[in-house]
Amino acid sequence: MKQINHYHHKKILVIGLAKSGVAAASLLHKLGAFVTVNDYKPLSENLEAQGLLEQGITVICGEHPLGLLEEGFELIVKNPGIPYHNPMITGAIEKGIPVITEVELAYRISEAPLIAITGTNGKTTTTTLVFEMLKIGEKQPLLAGNIGIVASEVAQEATTENTIVIELSSFQLMGIESFNPRIAILTNLYDAHLDYHGTRYEYVKAKANITKNQTENDFLIVNAEQSEVMEIANNSKANIIPFSAKNKLSSGAYSHEGWIYFNNEKIIALKNIALPGTHNLENILAAIAAAKLSNVDNDAIFKVLNSFQGVKHRLQVVTEHNGRKFYNDSKATNMLATQNALAAFTEPVVLLAGGLDRGNEFDELIPYLKNVKAVVTFGQTAEKIERAAKAAGIKTIIHVDNVEKAVPVAYELSEQGDVILLSPACASWDQYKTFEVRGDIFIQAVHMLK
Image (cartoon, rainbow, N blue to C red):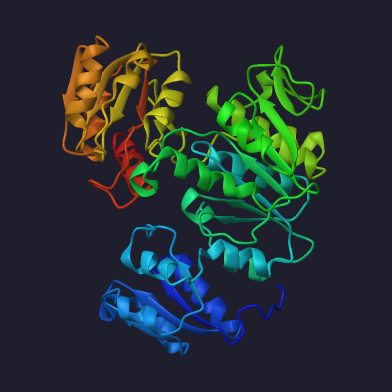
């Protein structure tokens, strides 16, 4: 990693732990900063904080005392999940204390160039595809970011021989200063996280930060089919690389007459791609563009796309049992993701859906339910999803307590040739800590059928 003096002898407050907070505090301590950590969980229950205390880092746990802001901190590193309306954060901003997220630290110390991916949907699949293409292409990539691997830890190990492939959320992008990826990807923009950002405008502005520091030496890969995305591109200084799954382009990545092209060069036939779902075609196009810009050869791209069947919890093939195919799409935490999942199938579908109630109805799902023969609901939104299913003319609708109970019910409702699909259209937090936990429970319940 780069040995920088930017934080040396600076008094820095890290608010919120989890993996990124622990990594940020340890890194700043290593860089010579005077670090204080503040986390809401009591010290007696907080193993992460106890570990930092053993490193000699000041730890304050059990509350977020506003008096901390009077202690002369020059910088705050905020856990991405803490909203900006938190009193500690608003108080810091009022005092003129800069607030960043941990990915800014990763960028500052990284010797490796970055490929950064953001967007409402498709981030993880695109990130994984780029990583796999670079790996097969022998470009020594490292995976980091919102995909579950702390960026500042990865950056400490990276050299000039590596490329860091990093997935970024809007939460992380709100807290950058100099962060500048050599290649950035913006997959798409839809309504999401409005409870955090307040308005769509603020959400889009956060996503646009991925390109705010890019120059004419950098690349921005964008969805040519979305005017909002193209508006961001028009305001970027980077070289714009468009992609389209619908129209032939004069440059960039596109699908045409059964083939994928990049800059008018044939890359791979659609029939040779293993990943299901028309929505995944956009993710594939974006990943191909990043790979080609990184000088990955077509053979490596072909090998990945010919074998890659998806990321866990994202339209993941679980198994086939007695003629039924089971898919885990627990990452579908909004309606658009579930719409995309349903559009991927022509077979009859038994849909498992429900979860956290964010106040919306599910009428937008109705046109996508035409192949759905039965719906099994759970969670806070069960009644709302049932209303949408009835409006779509679905006769068989059953409510159960949770995902585990939904699986055997769905199996009983299915026949040979059917798809049993967990695609909740909702966040998991009403019943499960994360969508990963929800998906793992689904997988376990499916295997219990055997």
